[in-house]
Length: 265
Image 1 (cartoon, one colour):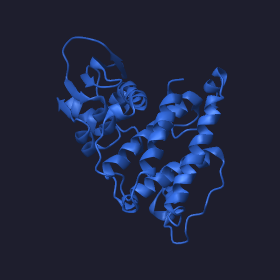
Image 2 (image 1 turned 135 degrees about the vertical axis):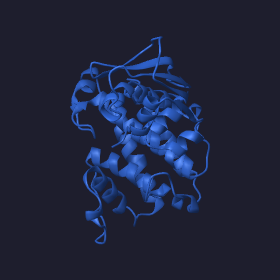
Image 3 (image 1 turned 90 degrees about the vertical axis):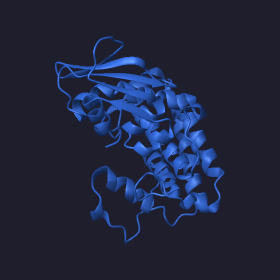
């Protein structure tokens, strides 16, 4: 399972990054609204620990649950519940929960990867659920790095980057129809470099479906740049996309796609 070494690489990078932080670094703002570096770390530990059935702290009495709904309520309450923790406790939860998850996955047989598993997109095979989890971990790793003013490069975690960018590319046809609501006949050319980038692939909308294939012919739009920038733009992180090499988007259909494509929420 390619997602397993990718998760191992992403979690290792998260832990190594957090272990090297100065005290003030934990409080730096990030591209995630309302969340500091420390809050993203708390979120990662919360989600992983919850999935494993670890005991969970309660949010403080002054947490305003009415300010959030749905998944935002669950994630922000988990972060709020850890604001009284030391950074050492936040990091320890990440170490323990990620290690437990990876050990469980390494011991999962082929049949287990096909078993239904809960995820933010509903009950899906475990392999797909872990792809969603990888996207959350890896993109939040990049959020932390951006908040710290560090470079964003796919080469730092090539396995995790390839797997996550690849998922974003595969979902492009879905996004063209379900998010951008592009009409039949829309054809967008992708020219993406780096791990899992697709050089000269076309997203074609036909019969209400978006298909991704290596096709020639006229197009209604074009998206060029790095695969990492494409991933970040699809995750609603346009400023970070520029820091990761940027994208050149031409044509109304391509602009509509990149403006509405959301991997998360």
